[in-house]
Amino acid sequence: MAILKILQYPDEKLHTVAAPVGQVTDKIRTLINDMAETMYAAPGIGLAATQVDVHERVIVIDTSEARNDLLVLINPEIMASNGISDYEEGCLSVPGIYGKVQRAESVTIRALNAQGESFVLDADGLLAVCIQHEMDHLAGKVFIEYWSRLKQVRTLAKLKKKQRSTM
Ligand code: QAP
Ligand code: CO
Image (cartoon, rainbow, N blue to C red):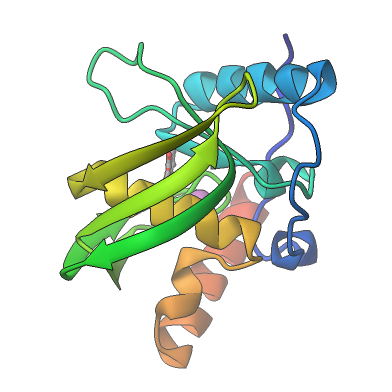
């Protein structure tokens, strides 16, 4: 297993659109293991392959309290969504920045697991928000891009200042 480097906003590579996984091979399973290790070490509750500069449709999530319930999503698709939630989000690619994003309150998704088997999952609450946040990464979108221009400009200035002070 290995800890992978997480791309930091505003890295342009975070805007890459990920390609579907053709076959769930050992190479994909190694990526999943490395992404899980990277997410747990961070620590975080979700990580998309885009964030580790691999542009394939792979996500790892663990929103459990005990951090022992890894959810792997390969080629995820949203089949249905309902309601509106306004959750405070963060992102391992935008450290130290938190803010609300409006999303669906519950989603039904279909995806493949690490064995390449198709499954359907109904999610709500934090898990539903996390799934939508990570699926945005696969489409090249970062959560702060839902915010107003002004709020984005201020966030960028804050990140630049922080990056200067930690060099
Ligand atoms: C996405 O984010 C998410 O700023 C996953 O300094 C987050 O794991 C979806 C993290 C919240 C829904 C709600 C962020 C760690 C972790 C930071 C994360 C930081 C250290 C973020
Ligand atoms: Co993120």
